[in-house]
Image 1 (cartoon, rainbow over the protein chains, first blue to last red):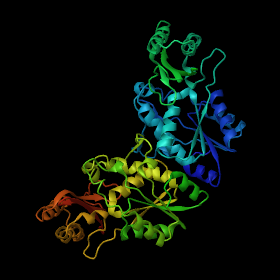
Image 2 (image 1 turned 30 degrees about the vertical axis):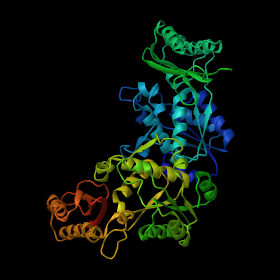
Image 3 (image 1 turned 90 degrees about the vertical axis):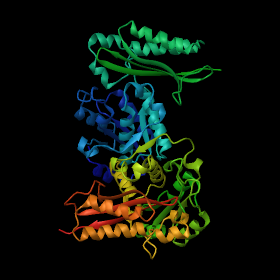
Image 4 (image 1 turned 180 degrees about the vertical axis):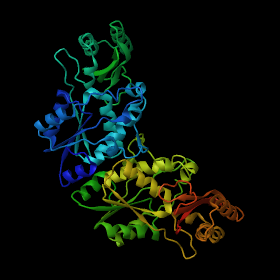
Length: 276
Length: 276
């Protein structure tokens, strides 16, 4: 485990091609799949573990976010990563972070609307980590679909020499997307939790069967969650590449949802490809 | 001359240490000194020529900014630079630049106050150029003192693996700091122009002789320019490292001035080191 920027730079000096997996720790099978995906791109895989305060609002779960550092390191070691960068806060933020990355407009909707400042915090820490690790590839999960697009757009607009690789969402057998925040669910909530995914899958099937009433579908999906006790932030049908509002004729769509079950906020999404 | 990002990446691939001099072209002896300084840091010197619209306000002089591309390339070639990156606007901004770098607070005063958005435009394009050229060293002139500090702070806070090297201001024999904008001056204005520097030098001498009435000195300097027909944006005594307001007891100061002579806005500065 490398705790400092200097140690990472020294370890990676001369590495011709690094594949990087940034995480907030509390690793589950979804993260491990990202690491395996990284290993297929470059022989030298670097993971980072850092719970980034900058992307949490004051009322959010920064303090109780699950931390399982020893287990995380053991699992990463088993997978053969070359290095784990795990800085403490003073190492990454020796002074208040004032130089910030303003994310592209696609970061203003959905998560950006419900978590103001979230993508600015994400973009800023990801850029810092990129500058420290200087990877050729960086792997992000599709579970955080909008984050993936924000990072891709940042890389493109800032001319970073990095290819962003997208990893598929891993799910439990009942469909629930793996997430560190699933640990917050009590057993009743855990039984209810797969409804977010099943609602998005229902939406996908409706679309595939020719239903083009996008706004009506969003409304029906939302009400399906509402009536089961969820507090819905959004259910939205968007274009895959830009997250623009889905319009008639669009082929590559994504259905995204964010909703709270008790105190726990879950997000998920399902890609939809419509034929001609 | 390399017009594309791809050509720069290809040319510099495998270069172990690049020293970079970003410019807006219209090169004068000041720029050439920065190139010579770069050559003392690394065998491979790269210069860029790009007039960056993003750092000009709509009413400013983007369109009439002097462009002397052929001469610039010839002079850089004479100095033995390895490559000149000279992209056109669609190459650097293929779509509107929406991912922006928010500069540190020291960019909000002085130039930042009088040219809103200037340092955001500078920081953003400099970061893009850094990501394209990936230098080990980058050279900036002290003539743009605040810009130098903004870039340094950006590098520090974004963990860029780049050392920022500062080049001294070059001056004509009468003291006027070399600047592309000097070309805008008519002959009467050109004769008057050295007063900006001589006023800052007077300020420095007052300080060195023990005058500690910082705000009084600023006022006197400003009025000296006012009464000679200048329209003064600011004359300010600040701390060198942070550009914080100079206070009694500070040793490393910088006197900065910005003022308009007719339609031409000139800036200059003088460092002051006070003994114990």
